[in-house]
Amino acid sequence: MVSRDQLALAHVITFEDVRSSLGIGHPIDDLLVRPGARFGERFAGQSLSYSGDYDRVTGPALSPLTAIPGAPGATLGAMKIGPTTVIQGHGPGAFPRTEAVGEGAIAIEFDNDQAAIAFDLRGGEDGTLDISFLRRDGTEITRLRIGALSEESFGFVRRGNVPDIAGILILNDDPQGISIDNLAFDKGQLTG
Image 1 (cartoon, rainbow, N blue to C red):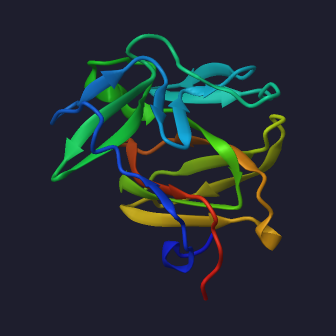
Image 2: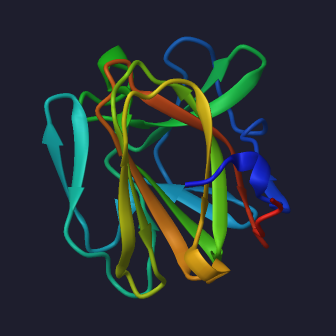
């Protein structure tokens, strides 16, 4: 992990053009496709299970890495937080239940393999975030657990700046769930 400010990333997805609303937001039942990336619940080949109100994803992803949606109401959602729009995973409670918001898995498949990525985390009430980095063939590069979550920005860069991150999977167990915003990628280089 590195400071987001250390990364020079050319492409940023802000989600401002995604249909959203205040409160529990608006459901996204299919893949969310944006230039450079596709957002879903998990990757083809992986299994979905639950731990209380939270999604759990297990098993290897198939090659080539392919993001897939979940069940209707249980994939993703977009909501307004202040002046910005964020996305979150919907957990097993499913939309429109409040306890589902922010407690589901988020899978992000990049069009091109990346050496570095960054995103802003919204929400976070001292829970934990698990993020898995995967190659195009579905194998896992590494998995990180980040604790005591709060609203902050995260940056990640591969050792040696190797461009082999084809996708990431984000899970959490935060009491209020989490959302992401400002996903940045493409040509990441350390600046400091």
